[in-house]
Length: 127
Image (cartoon, rainbow, N blue to C red; front, side, top):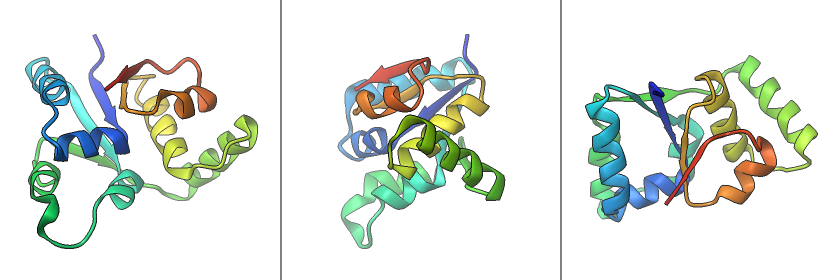
């Protein structure tokens, strides 16, 4: 049983839209005491100014979440992954590296194709 779940940008958008599927995935993760991890570049990609994202803001303020930042060693690893995969999306690569570091834990995504290009072995939960 995986002890972590990584959320990508599509998952955060689904949170904002109150997706029943994502809400159930998050409830199940909490029930099994799995960490729910959001790479900070994902937050930067999705969050906008103003009050239109109240659901998302409430979710991100939840103390249950863990955030994975981007430091220098991770940036080097992300750049190397982008080079090997021939892709250019830094945020997707952050998600892939985060999931790898957490023991190849599942990633909740709405765009599996990009993540599969980065690491075809990652377990993906497509929403």
